[in-house]
Image 1 (cartoon, one colour):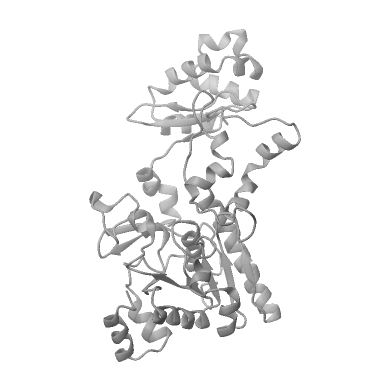
Image 2 (cartoon, rainbow, N blue to C red):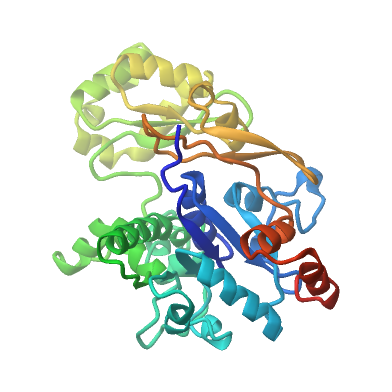
Amino acid sequence: MKRLLSDVKVLDFSWMIAGPFATKFLSDNGAAVVKVETVKRQDVMRHFQPYRDNKPGTNRSGVWAAMNSGKFSMALNMGSPKGREIAMKLAAWADVVIENYAPGTMQEWGFTYENFKKVNEDIIMISMSSLGQTGPFAHYHGLGFHLQGFAGFNQITGFPDKEPFGSIAYTDFTAPPFAVTAVLGALDYRRRTGKGLYIDNSQVEASMHFLGPTLLEGTVNNRDSVRNGNYSNYAAPHNAYRCKGDDRWCAIAVFTDAHWNGLLQAMGDPAWSKQEKFATLLGRLEHLKELDAHIEAWTGGRSPEQIMQTLQALGVPAGVVNDGRRLVEDPNFAARSFFQTFDHPEIGKAVTRRSPVTYSNADTSVPRGAPVLGQDTEYVCTQILKMSDEEWLGLMESGVLA
């Protein structure tokens, strides 16, 4: 079957997570993505754990490999005028240019939308900076780990008796779907009008979509949201409970009387559940710690899989808290070929995930694994830019392609 974006060409200046995650969506659906890298200033994610066999190396990061599958890696020294000249030639080839540097970085190289238009009249460019290209804080540098605090996520993540707790680099995962949607819209606009455009995508602003209740609490009720761990104001029990095994857990959420009755049935209608204080949601919310202790006394002797299956059969929301290994080995993901494994020259088997969206008329499998740094420099030079062997070898020797 065809690949939906097989006629789309992307010049990728992005790094870390947000930009590469966006270009992975495009690559997974067939776009030719040329990721420009340099030995002198490598993508920081190349040096993020975990490493294969705990051995660090430029090409040994599992996270980088998962985020950059399907792309071409071109080593290009952007500090040299010749390197920037070659990048401009790639811009003339591309349909889309994507970057997520701090505002000003691309401008220092002369890589503005207006300059790209001089070599490619209908080009589409998207910038995915932390806070957008304009505004009093636009020049602030930051990564998703910092931005989750700036956006307000840390204030509501964690436990009420402890300090704000950062989770993953949250904004790095909220911005890419918005960026991809914007790029697809721009491609359709260009198809209809023959014109390109520039897209300013703020990672923090994209994340606000997921803070609706917090924003409403503040603006409508004039109340600040607070950290409450795994608890909910609308369900009890509502927590992750320790199960049999080493660091094994199961999440259980009881929202309705039917859920509560199903949980009691699974537990064999224990005597403690007959107490009046546990009869209603309000009562259970007032005695959460005691309730949790009773639930965990039951879950502690059973596997999370057993608990999940038992409760779900009775209509009670419950789910195993999986770790990375169990996710990759999960039979449902395996049946859908969600995780794909590729041979990698330095780390052996490398795992990545394909697009979470499949189509009946298109191929969405990942075309190939992640490249080592500069793996496709020769291909980009000779096949895309049509350089002679003498020309690209000369650029290699001079340090431009490095």
